[in-house]
Image (cartoon, rainbow, N blue to C red; front, side, top):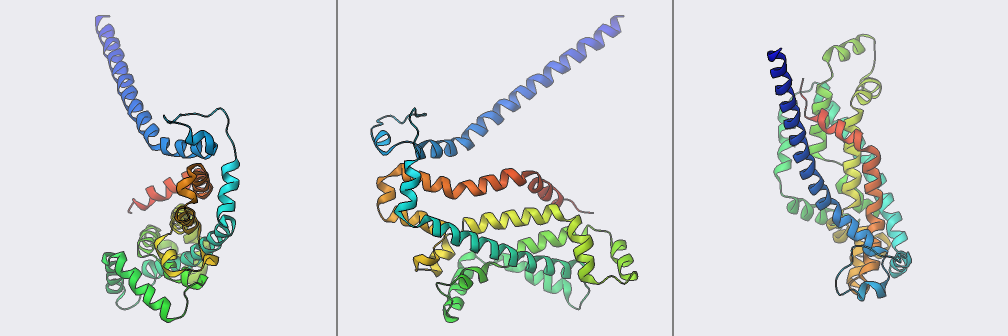
Length: 291
């Protein structure tokens, strides 16, 4: 009887320790979440404050009793933000699709096909990751300029249709698929392309979704290359549109309208991540597995 009471006391003590540990963990997670999400809250709050109300605040208020959408209309009228939005959608869609084709085919070749010097070629390919981005930008700029592709969608898209890191990530995933499946498919007369389409892509779907979303985010937030290769506003992306609002003086003067433009630009990426967050997490965790 005493032994049973002793076990119960130990169990209660262990339960209290677990509860205390979980409380501490959740406390720090809550604090971290507030720190991370507060800038987004402040951006959204500022975007719905009127210009007069914002300027009259000597001490910033953490809420507003009279929200307005006027700043969103002002942001779209300050610059052709709608056209920049459409340019960004076109640029992102074409670049991501082209990149997926290149990355999938390259990863399949390195993972499943046998050809002379494959390991050496892949090693040299990986070494490209050590080249500073600044050197790549300069080289790309000179090449695109010589080809007469400045102020064109081709010039915007062409340097972004491949990624050494994504090829490496997808190759590692392809290699996790048992070789027996490939040999059995070849015995049945299945072509390499059909095996890739019917077997490998469905199995590695989480990683492909992750790569797609990361590329979309990269294209959507792209700033340096589009600003470098385009000086015609007809080809500006949303990142250039935000900068144009700021450089025109309108954004520096009307902060709420500037924040409204930032909300419009940021919202699609936030929604995209929330919708596909489970796929992203699955793809990242799968990329860390071997064997």
